[in-house]
Length: 304
Image (cartoon, rainbow, N blue to C red):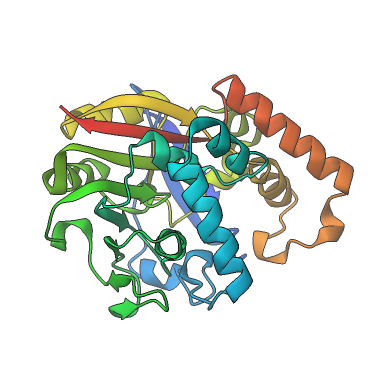
């Protein structure tokens, strides 16, 4: 992240999303405290099975499509009071983030690491026409039921120019975040925005849970920044950080508590936590975000 050469130690982390429990070493940077995997497995693609959450391309029912399209329109394009009302009470802050990024109806949007295209499909239902998804781990080029093209490519293989480029929890999955950000900068319009949502080392959840922190997600997460490290890799890649919004959720507690008990997230059931516990996790997540100590951050980047 910061191109530092000194390590502050290593952490042995197990794969716990699916419960394989294979262990991997993660090295901590002595300069910016970011962490990265020491050696990615040769069969990394096998850790993205068909059941991986971001690959879900299920056809959405008519009522849900209409409701999602209406909400997206209101949050993105309605006057501020109406936009805030439409966004209120929702855990997913993607649409408010896109509004902050300056998305217009005619914006050309690229989602890197798109998976099954869920985010783009929602934007398509709201009537945004210029959408493209790229992901090197999907099986082949496809077109969603909403007409969104998803291509089996990395950011280095994409051509064109875009007003918004999203790394929505995907930058941590690449071996060289600086190289991918630099490639995205070349695709970004002069006044465009690059939105990076990413887990953050150094947060309360990292300090509390250590190797059991859900955000590590070994071995799929190859490099995880601290807030400082994310700022430095952005600068190295030709960007400036315009704004940082902390958007962590209750999952930082729920999943990390499971991992601490040696329970894979894939085995999560309603019986693991009471409604009161979940409500408290949500309250704590909101408080940590307000204190800029949540375990996820959204970085709005502009070209330098």
